[in-house]
Amino acid sequence: MFATSDRNKGQWSSMDKLSFTPEQPVQVWLKDLEISVLLCKPVFTDRDGSTGENLVSNNLELCTEAFKTLHKKRWSVEEYHKLLKQNASLSKSPAGTVTTQSNRLFASLPAYVKLERLKFAHKLNILPSKRESI
Image 1: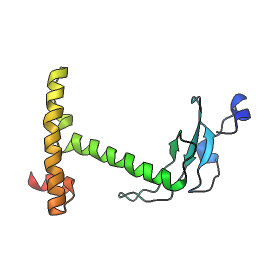
Image 2: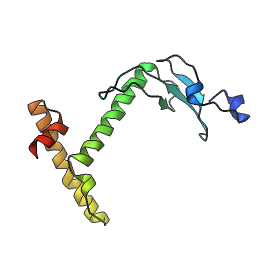
Image 3: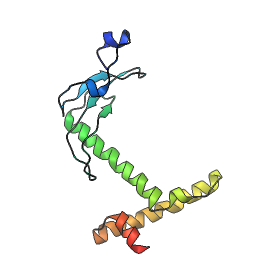
Image 4: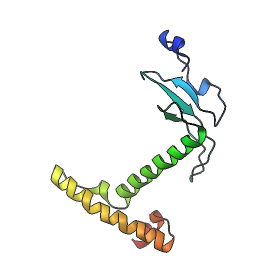
C-alpha cells in the first residue's frame, strides 16, 4: 500500500504498519487490485462494543462523513440478511432445487415484514422477541 511507483516495483506494506490519521481518507493501492482505492478508518463503536474497521471504496472523492453514511447503509443490508437467515428461517431450508429455494425465499419475506412490524409497534429488538416467543 504505497504510491504507484512502489506498487510497480512490487513493494507492499502491511496495513497495520501504516500510520495515517483516523477519520482521514487516504488513497492507497491494495495488492492484487488493479485500481487505487480510498481507505478510511473512522472512529466509531458498534453495538457489540467493537471499535471501527477499515472502510474501503473505489470512489476516490468520498469524505469521512460520506464513508460513515455509506457504511451505515451497507450495515443495514447486513442486518437485513442476518434477520432473514436467522429469524425468517431462510437458512434452515432443506430445498435442493431452484423452485423450492425460490419458494422458501419468497415465503421468508412476509415473515421478515411481520417481524419488522412487531419491532416498530412494540419498540422491541427482533432477536430477543423471537427467543421470548419460543
